[in-house]
Image 1 (cartoon, rainbow over the protein chains, first blue to last red):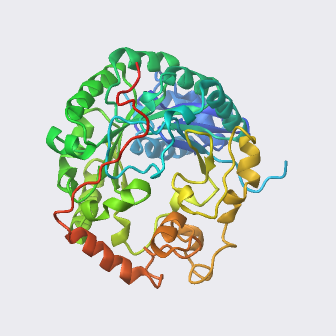
Image 2: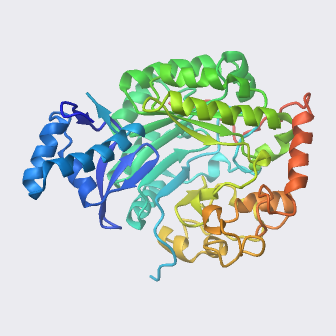
Length: 90
Length: 370
């Protein structure tokens, strides 16, 4: 995932709060991915408008954490979703 | 209510057993539910609400052909309102452009489209429905235009295994993000078609190799889920992700099953949604608890390091092949029946002239309802 990439959740992939298990999940075709706090924080910023670089800067500010660390963590996570076709990049 | 297991993630709702196709590998039971025994709209809607409250996230609307239900759009809408992710498992034959738009407006999340073959000759022969392939391809155009996320389900057997490369191309042409390459499973009606459908060992190996290569070549473009030919395998499937752990199945007349073939195990007794809540059935019905966890296992499963990997394989297959649902799945290399099963698979595959025994449908409706 490059800084200028714009990640977006394609149709059929959406965030959902699981009231029974009390956590966030990513619902995708015939799959449900349980999200930890970091995964949810990242995907919550994905709006199909802002670039990956803008998202990591925002997260860095919000959580007062080094941007390099955030970039590394989110890049691996988003790339894995992309491989499964749960995430598109514009 | 005391809980016996984590809540289920997925529910397969078999809305009807009616279907315009008559595929010889139909996984519906030999004794199918007739139209007049199907549950009405309100009962299904209540079941969807109960499922969501129990913890189900994914709803698979299946059949038979779910489009044969006149109330399909209403059911999709209700399922979305309940908070469920809605997946329509369909042949798409007979789905009109208007109905697809209505399903779109109702909030349908995803379409899983079955593929009987990659051309009309093969597909219409397998489905037993002349003109079916052309009608399916017409519906695919509308599905593409609307933009439904699409998974293709290619059921593979001895007659169409060579079409796998074309199926992968078709999936990409259709804009599918995922394809399931599912070698035919022998449950229900399919059991009597093993002579006609069993792939040869060489075919099974070629398919595995092709899938492995295609997964690399198509990484990030097309996700390939693969169900290998298990009669030719050395380890069994992790059936249902473990009995009574992740999924449940509701039949057209309201019986709640741990898997779609569970009625083939004669000593199991199932409850119906008309009589008990889904939560009560999930946690307390004896059929769900019969093969949960590992306590029911005998040897060689009990001492096996893979016992929580595959949970001893498929209970229905152990029943069908050995007559004992608590035995190790005979697919497993550790089963005393493994060698015999492999020999039997080769014998089935050698019956080159065996004719298809087509599924015969209950009721009279041949066409999906409009």
